[in-house]
Length: 271
Image (cartoon, rainbow, N blue to C red):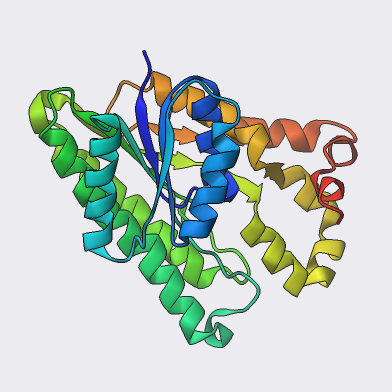
């Protein structure tokens, strides 16, 4: 059955890859981002190969009124929202905590945390009022597992906080609308996105010195999106945690001779 899907932060990166994969499978998708120009470009691209409806709305996820407007417009365009993915996020990962720019800190905290919290509030309220309920997924990331990584202190803190937030929301919504509203999380692994490439350009020596390990850990968004979409579409339980780079998958990569050379994702991006 075709679903109606809203993805925040979907003009680039994993958000756009997810939108493209949902659309290719015939689902209707609402894309969003801060810039209307970027939203229009993404809609044109995703619309090129789909039987589903694809629309877009410029949204600042740090503005709760704007997030509510995204829900209202999506509901008007599609009739209902079956799946809402809080994906919008920003990562600045080339400086330690004390040297991270104040504006970068503010952007990460407000976009990653407030954007996801506002999106969750709006989506849960809206789905509780729908006859069919719906499902919300929050996008986590590096640091959400509690591990400390170099130059990711602020970003990781936001994602660690969202892990706790999502777990709390799962408990609070367990019996909402007769169990028809479900909340889950996605751990997509380490992905090469426009944001990752921006940070890599700021510290090329780090990429060069860590090339082998990066080629083991990193993935292209288009390689990961089909798996994540399939798991979201077949998810039926509250608190579902969908992870791409599992311990089993990671161990297999390290144990496979020559994996870093065969899986040279850096070379695909000219690095």
